[in-house]
Image 1 (cartoon, protein in one colour):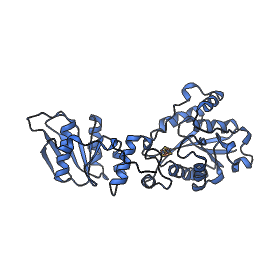
Image 2: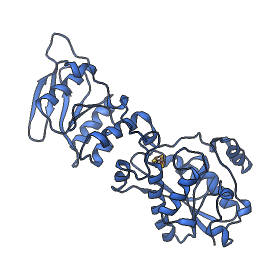
Image 3: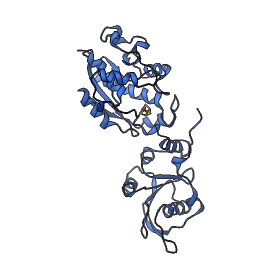
Length: 339
Ligand code: SF4
């Protein structure tokens, strides 16, 4: 039996690509690629259920961060290295294809739909650099692309593939309806990837461009709290609510944490904070000042913050300082490199 592997994000395009194969009697094994910046496993599992396919979720390895730090093919509008990321995904999909004894791979890419990664030239780069070459079939735009191996060998009927291009979703939605997709099976467009979000991207570019020696923990911490940069080595992260305050405390205890101090207001209500990088006296004063700014500090009283470090615990009185009162969050400052 002909079998293919489909990269399934949970979006409409990848669902349609799968259904096109199923219409030709081809068995589909869905593969969802999870990175520390994506959030769509539920959506992809639902989509797989609706389409009646198996789904396997694979995660990134630590080398994924290298391509986020220095993508060969650059960034999209945010910190999204989509071309490099797609190559990385397809390299892993290739191994999966061999493991499940499938003959080729499909994806829901549509020529010209996304400014980065779906230009015709990008599609070529992705096929070639992932090693898949003409084993990678894009059913939605296949008629605009040279025939792939499964088409040439008759495993797939090229006549029953499509020639979609551009950003409009109208034709794709119509095709979904023709295939009998119910309205709740047609998801709204979303990359589900934090690297495309402007504020998150600012935090990523801050790490990449300013902080030498960033680690996986530093990237994971980007999902929590307000981030302030004190200097090249030091950053302060403040919880936004009780849940994030608890998360910061937990993250501080992790083995690979780069935080050196955990700060907690004990005489007034306010956010917890972490300092990453050296906890100098100035950095501690700055972090306590930020807690003062965002907390319910009481004027005229000692606003006490407890500092926990690896080998000691002590208290500080929080005071506002010029920088702690006026600094903007990293998320609100764009450091995006010029393309
Ligand atoms: S949006 Fe994110 S997950 Fe999707 S290809 Fe781009 S970088 Fe990768």
